[in-house]
View 1 (cartoon, rainbow, N blue to C red):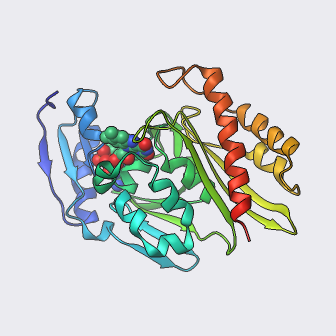
View 2: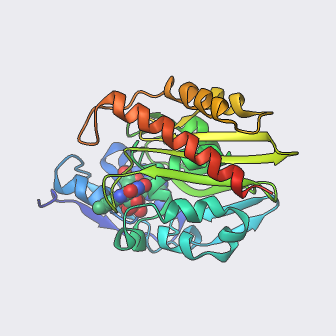
View 3: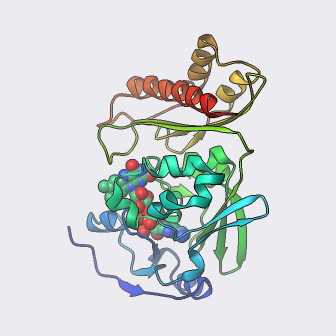
Length: 287
Ligand SMILES: Cc1cc2nc3c(=O)[nH]c(=O)nc-3n(C[C@H](O)[C@H](O)[C@H](O)COP(=O)(O)OP(=O)(O)OC[C@H]3O[C@@H](n4cnc5c(N)ncnc54)[C@H](O)[C@@H]3O)c2cc1C
């Protein structure tokens, strides 16, 4: 349970961090809150020769509004997401989901950047970001680029991040006023990763669903957007038959692992239930 040896670096700017990472390629690794990386290093599943700690980079902190987007710095902790009045007002789904991540001790240190960059299918934020239409700002030696969250996840722990690139910020388009939202997460106990979870953002008009996005957590190697399920509810008042249809459409794209959280069929079944519950709760909140 002791990590291999590594050199520790603590840059004070993104430019310096990118410069350090560029020197080592795959031998360098970014350290944010360390709540995913340090356990991996202790198990020797990760053995970086160089750790670049982002904790001293103030430009990676802060939550601000830019035009119609909320922009969150990569080093904002999950605890800070929970406490942000700006987020509670503009993207309340983020606060609701943050409260479902792990426990307060993990949230005090774990960061939003680490959560979305890690590529762990069990992390809650990636599916949420896809549901909200978020994009990630990546900075590397040859410059910056923006990647949609929906294009970022390519496999378990495999993302669009190139060696030496840093995720610096997340931009989330503010959902329309009066939107409904919900994150439903089934877990074995408080602090656990999801057995299955679903995020919903929708708008209602005249008692019918006008727009809808549905995201799924830990039901595949990557977070998923359940596009057919979302289409199935448009123009409906979410009657029981429609809810079942949406759940079936979502289950059709799930391919969870059979693990300590349950066999495949069970996890797909409860995944469908999370979708139905999230749709109902989101609709109840929409104005
Ligand atoms: C007991 C426990 C329970 C947990 N339960 C949950 C849960 O229910 N839901 C959930 O979502 N998460 C859970 N987590 C994970 C937790 O939220 C982590 O903190 C988070 O996933 C990673 O964030 P971090 O800041 O700790 O990143 P780190 O562990 O420092 O980094 C994780 C990975 O991302 C890379 N990275 C970090 N930041 C950046 C960046 N800015 N740019 C590029 N790469 C970067 C690192 O190099 C590393 O590969 C749990 C963790 C623990 C220990």
